[in-house]
Image (cartoon, rainbow, N blue to C red; front, side, top):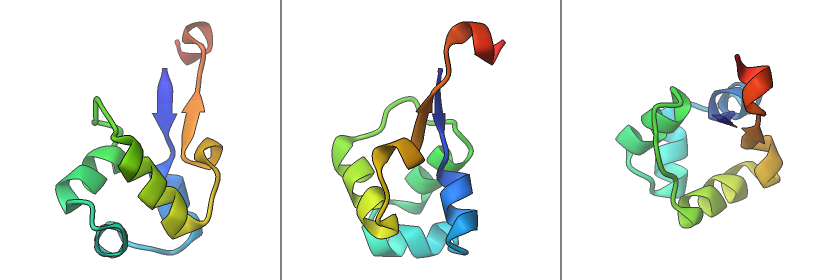
Length: 71
């Protein structure tokens, strides 16, 4: 399972979903789906823009959790 840690990054940086959408020019609905981990696919360009906005590594945004640990 892949965990999207966008909510953690937003909280850590005291940023709203709307502010991130404005900075990255990613649709607010897309940011919301990532925030609530409801998205099924993420575009690499979107990952790049989010990492640029937070000046972070991809590992700070995405985390792989093995199936046996997720259950």
